[in-house]
Amino acid sequence: MNHRILSLVMSRLLITAITLVIVSFAVFFATMMLPGDTATILLGQAATPEAVAGLRTAMHLDEPAVIRFIRWFGGLLTGDLGTSYANDMPIADLIAGRFINTLKLAGVTALFSVPIALTLGITAAMMRGSLYDRIVTVLTIGVISVPEFMVATSAVLLFAVYLKWLPALSFANEVHSITDLLRVYAMPVVTLTFVVSAQMIRMTRAAVVETLNTPYVEMALLKGASRKRIVLKHALPNALGPIVNAVALSLSYLLGGVIIVETIFNYPGIAKLMVDAVATRDLPLIQSCAMIFCVGYLILITLADILAILSNPRLR
Amino acid sequence: MTTDTAKTPAAGRLGYRFNLVGMLALAVILLWGLVAVFAHLLTPYPVGDIVDVDYFGPMSKQFWLGSDYLGRDIFSRIVMGARYTVGISVAAVAIACTTGVVLGMIAAVSGGWTDTLLSRFLDAMSSIPSKLFGLVVVAAVGSSIPVLIITLSVIYIPGAYRFARALAVNINAMDFITVARTRGENVFYIIRSEILPNILGPVLADLGLRFVFIVLLLSGLSFLGLGVQPPYADWGALVRENIGGLPFGAPAVMFPSIAIASLTISVNLLIDNLPNKIRDRSAQ
Image (cartoon, rainbow over all chains, first blue to last red; front, side, top):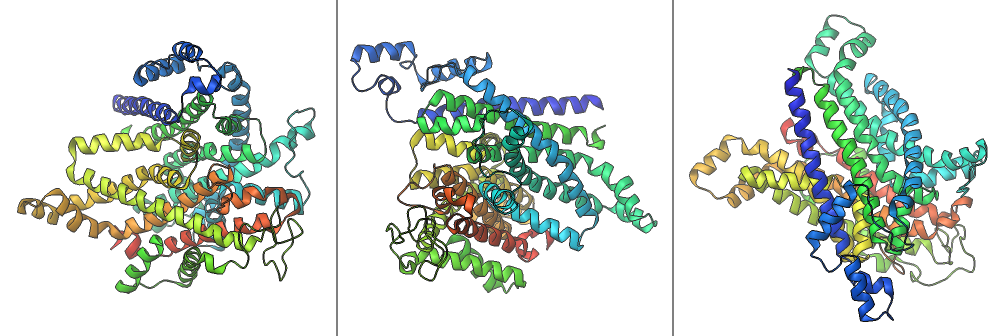
């Protein structure tokens, strides 16, 4: 039956490719709505009409939007991201270092949040209805229902203002020692871990609870299996697919969280770059950053779907 | 306010009973709704006026929730901010859910190409992270209240669509729809009289959840400086303005956050404590 899995995965990948084209179309045309002529804005009010016309030709601005979209999309695929309006640097150079910084932040967060969330989610589902479960549920609902910046400000209040473990909003961007490293990473990672874990705990708990409600688990219970055995031997192997799916989906919340966290803690990542680009209206830079985020998000949700297909024993 | 009025009569008329947590949550939501409507009567000081000689002043009898980074009264600013946060979110959620639910029902009833095209397109739209979409649109057209409302609703149309379509597809497979079709009823009659009444409960619960997402996204955008623009301020913008007071725990930065949390947590709790009858039609 491997053939069937393969065709399912291939069709999912095809959908992702189509989605990518639609998304890039949307990103391109959203930024096209900007009022005013780009060439005039770049050259300033005093520019001669000839200079403006020359720049328009050089930047291919006088071509139809569809041609420009194809040119831009082709550039994206070949790694040519264009030139920033604001400081005339190739966007690829601007982004490279920032992108690695964001990946580091996301990686460290995933490293902490996945084990924490899985442990809490699975144990809460095992002890469903207990005080422990209720505390975990209330806390996760609490974190999910507040904006990310509030998790960040609460973390600052708790760890920096009251406990004084970490410096509040320190903007050290050069890392010279372990303490500096901790200073740059600690608060952003703590905040992101809270945001992502809350989602992951909720989804993991739901996945395990759903498995525990199945007839075969009831059967195991009736046969007198211990609670531990029911969960570890009967429920968990079957809940694995939904759990992995939940992990991949929750990690996509990193993308939204990263925008807020990088801004609030002044972390030199790609989201901060993008928010700054919004302030200077540097459209090529915004388009490129937006595409990176969309591609990352698409990869994660596609991965989640493919893992769900692979882990479905009915297809094996 | 749409969420409030939409839910209360349904609950009252059909005689559903809420538990204590649900009642409390409903009370908080109604309170914020009333505050938003009557904001201009409730502010003790004019919102824009600098009334305190101190900045980031503490809570006192004169200034209930302290003063902000310019010495303006925070209580007045939060009360006025409720109007922006609640108003924009209610407008956006109303547009998003109406459009999404109508499209979802049309897709489910029509099937075929309409369904495939709509689903493909809206699924693609939903794979743009919401905060990013907001950032790009605001960067392109600039921030104003109509732009915010439309952007927020566009972002949440795909979710409402997918939810309504999934429910409507189930209803669409039932016998009374086949009977209606055989009778020769058109698509709009089927949508209005056969599908909608049967999916209304879960759709309203979903509307509440979507309202929470919209409040959170709006606050996030305002916090980034891309939402409601000064001199006006919603709750997210209030946190942004006063973020300088964070290192010494000023009330000016805590209370707007608490206002957001009280609203969103209440809506979530209300939805969680709705009777199963409303929340999940299939459970009946």
